[in-house]
Image (cartoon, rainbow, N blue to C red):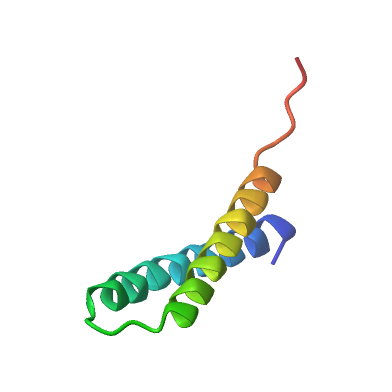
Length: 66
């Protein structure tokens, strides 16, 4: 497996985890009693995933010279 395939696989896994966190967070905010600390940690994890996804996507885009 080459580097690009590896990056694409990792990107797919991160996007999947990001979507899963969306679902979990949406369910948690609808509950009457919410563990705010747990919710905050999930949101921070989601932000870290978003940053990692952006980093990987930028690695997959070939450099273009002006």
